[in-house]
Image (cartoon, rainbow, N blue to C red; front, side, top):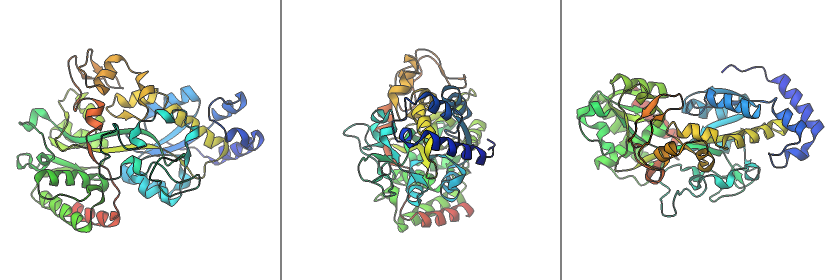
Length: 427
């Protein structure tokens, strides 16, 4: 979206904030005096992030319900992480993924978020606090959100090992990713990650071309083949990276991969056209293929899922009325409508209790409880994506999220990984 000049607005806001005073800004975000609430309605917040959640539908609804204008800019994951660090004054809200927090937050471009100002903090799923959706579930290898969710204090950039009053991001979205397949074209049951490199799919497989994510899919494939057992897939040693990249180059030169995609649209086109029949995929991309009437399955696999999560951060430079508007926007985000919208795309909302209020019992049963649809399931855009009797791929929330084996990761050897991934890209 096109940005409008921001200096006049910021100058005006600075003056307004000085008149109203700091007392309101330091309190709870809801229940503003009328004049304060009216001022918030005039604010524009500049937000950037991936196309997954930087959606016009969310901006339009936010404007209608809060008066706050969102100027959204969508980009790919790598570009979002780079912008967060290198252009900190070009945005107010960073909508980024948790694994990039490990890179971004220590640079000081985002401010710790006060959980006392988050109306639904107690309702945020435990995945972002303790890392477990059930007491017995494992956290999973890699940059699990809980490992970078908190910092030690109001001005700290040091991650805390346990919950504090200060979060790096307020979580909004997450999912358990796996391989997408075209069931009408693969010709056999798909049960394991190793199927990605089955010679039967030579020239018809694809992998995501984002190092921190693609390397995890490769590691899941290598372990599934029994070629190597990693100490920690989410934090590989240099020799482990070398072996993984060598494997990918070998597969590439053998002609296994039809493509290496970076954007949602690319993955949808590859699968819709039938050029690719098995690939790394995201849930809404599967939904998008299905909405065209083309069979596509987000295939559960025996080795488990690769998890990811995202959230909203507030830029370090944001203060006063603008910062309060940012908190108000985040509270609105968690209040239910957006969560239901994201759930209908196959993601999960960070606050399930509010999202449920905006979904029908049929939708909730299909998307969250693993129940058969009792009526057609529609996408947020109104296209039918499941018929009566259909089940969600992978089953219930606990069946899917409870079987995350690893998370998208930034490793200690991140620079080395990027160097080696580039060698794979040009091989």
